Amino acid sequence: MTVLPLKSSLGVPLDAAAQVLQFDDALEPSLKGELVEVMSELPVFFLNRATHFKTHALDLIWYHPFAYSETDLRIEDVEPKINALDPSLAVIGKCWQAIKALHDYPVRLYDCSLSSNTFGTEGNYHHDISEPSYREGHHTALVYCCKEWDVSWAGETLVFNEHGDIVAGAMPKSGRIMVIKNDPLHVGRSVSRICPTDRRVLTFKYWQVAA
Image (cartoon, rainbow, N blue to C red; front, side):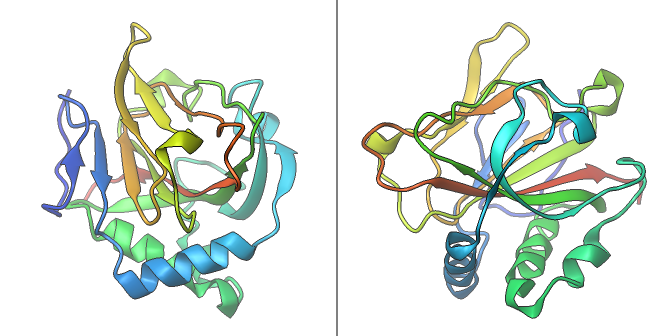
């Protein structure tokens, strides 16, 4: 499988095939601070995304949608919807521009949302795209928006190979970006019982498109 190039030398490959990369300094400190502050204050709603997105049956999460494709996930670009959000949410568009700048190829955004995991909200390992033929060229960028994180609080994002073995993982460190390419199986694990906060993740889902 072709390895897709990324611009930034800050990206740390977390698996041998460079399908998963981690960026800890892609956001300027002021942007990171603003993003975490805004995302921490937003209300979230308990929703079932399985029907609309044709994902897995347990796609039940605390969730705040910002923009998503209402037509064809492969065609509609929802960046204009991001740019049209209330000015108080302008930081989301700034974050998306920072993610786009990591790539050496054009991309098309089809979904952007905030998710929140509390103790007992256990993730289910899944693909974001149910149709296997659509997975190549698919990207998921996870931007962790907690003000702080301790390793004892758990909440890891794990990525699996076709045999169900863990090939990459990341802790939800504040401001960290995890880019998962070509939609391998992955999961956001529940936080631990001693975690005093929720695990907030701003997620961008997008496609590589022809130049």
